[in-house]
Every structure is written in structure tokens, then in C-alpha cells.
Image (cartoon, rainbow, N blue to C red):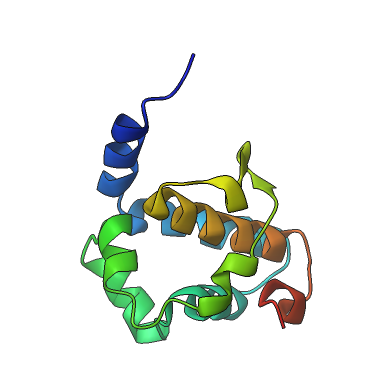
Length: 122
């Protein structure tokens, strides 16, 4: 059964960052990583600092708003490749969906114990 790309985009656009952020925190901390490392990964992708991330969580910002208002999306984000949640991130055509999966992929790599320099494509 094919997923309607418009419906998927609308559903993803309405998701709040605050609804997923605690799951990111839990995932990385359960695997022995720190909140500081998680924030480093989010900052690398979006340009938000700690205060900016806290503001995004507090104000109920959607993922669409999170990325639209990002201080500086990293130009190296296109180097993020691989499969996350059944999607090959480099093949996703919807820009919002791709940015969300980039973030998911970075969080997953952090939780799996990858070195930060590798996660940040350094």
C-alpha cells in the first residue's frame, strides 16, 4: 500500500519537536550518551544553540517550523546517508521528511555509539 506523499508531508509538518525530543533524550541517555552530545548533534544540523533548542521545545514548534526557522542548516547535511525507519535518507524527495530523517539518523548514530566526529561528518 503506497503512502500518499501529501498526507505524509501534512502529518509530519504537524508533529511538534517537543513531542519527539524527550524520546531522543531517552534514547541517547539509555545508551550511555549525554544530553550535551545530543545538543551538539542537533546544533550541527540546525544551528540552534542550547537556548534555541530549549525554546523550540517550550514553544511547541512543529518540525516544519523547527527547520524553517533554523539559524543555519548545515550544508554538509547532504552527506548523511543510510537507512532510518525503513527510508534511505538520501533518496527522500520531500525536503521536510528528509530533514526529519537526517535528525533521526544522527540521533540513531549517537545512540549506537558512533564517535561525534564521524556523526558530524568531520
